[in-house]
Each structure stands twice: as C-alpha cells, then as structure tokens.
Length: 222
Image 1 (tube, rainbow, N blue to C red):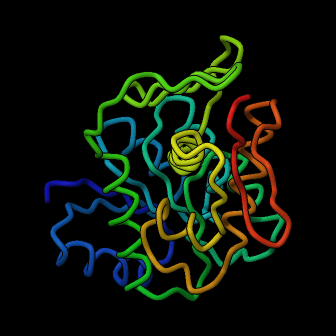
Image 2: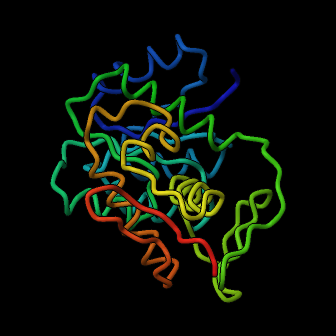
Image 3: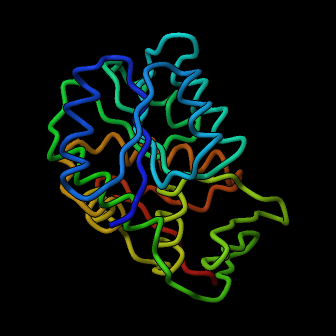
C-alpha cells in the first residue's frame, strides 16, 4: 500500500488504538504526541494523510491544521472529543477534510482513511470544466473564480466536480455521501451541509442551489 500516515495525538492509548489497525491494514504509521512535535515531523517527511487531535499540548490541533495548510494540501482528518457544531465548523474553516468525534469506531476511521486516500490519489484526467466565472482543472486540482484561485479542501473539490459534471441533476445528501465520501456516513448529514456552506463561501458566487426537501444542484446554463 505504501501510504504514509501521521497520527498527532497526545493520548498513548488512542495512538495505539489507531496505529495498530492502520499498520495491519498496510499503512506506514508515524506518531507524534503534541502539536509542536507533529509539525516538526511533518516538515521532515512526506505524508499521504494526517489524523489530528484538536486538544493537544504546546500547539492545538486547529493551529497545527492551519500551519500545515500553509505548506500542503495533504488530507487531514480531525479526530477529537469536541463534538459541537461550532467545533466542526471551525475545523472545516481551517481546511480539514473530515471530522470524526470520539469515541469512534476504528472500522469507520479505516473506511474514511481509505476513501479519502482513494480520492486524493486518483489519476483521473480531464479538460478544464468551465461554468460562468468558475474554472475547475481536474488535472491540476485547481479551482478559480473570475481568475482568482479558491482554496478548496479535497472534499469540497470533489463535491464541486460532481455538481459541475452533472449540471441540472439534483443530488440528495445521501447521494453526496455515497458518491463523494465513498462510505456509509451512518445517516449523519451535517458534514454535507458544512461542506456545501464552506464551498459557497469560498467560491463567492452562489451557483449551488438548495432544492428544498431534496438536496443540491448546479443549474444548467441557459
């Protein structure tokens, strides 16, 4: 599998709960016990994904996420006991790709890691997709709006790509969970709402329509 995962978690027991199944699944795992150590390790190696606690000694997880995003678009999954809506929104605002609350199912963690790595390692090639002021380059994984780049997370990019490729089609939240997340999200649709909200805010153009009681779409151009 040859995928490198960095776990930044201060509790040794949780480090073990995470690292052993991931290692058994074929991943190479490195651990850090505080935010500063995590940043130092990240700067010295290449990683394919980061599992990041929020309540960390020295530097908290939100700040770690922010610092990593200044250097890299590596997938980041926040793994934390902070479970309020505001906490999750803050995590997505820091450009985390996913948010898992403790206590967690290790099977669910493994599925989310697998799904996120599958998306980010895709070799899919296509031409630039244009819609009004939006230009999405699938090969460069880059989105610009009126010539200005929009810094999207991997999930936000995949949502926008799906909607742009299927203009006029309404996707339910379950559709998005299955097609973008790539796993069963146990009926919790809040993550979809957070990503759509953040996507609209970053694009600064309101082309993602809410179809009340159904889901979301981008309308066909006239």
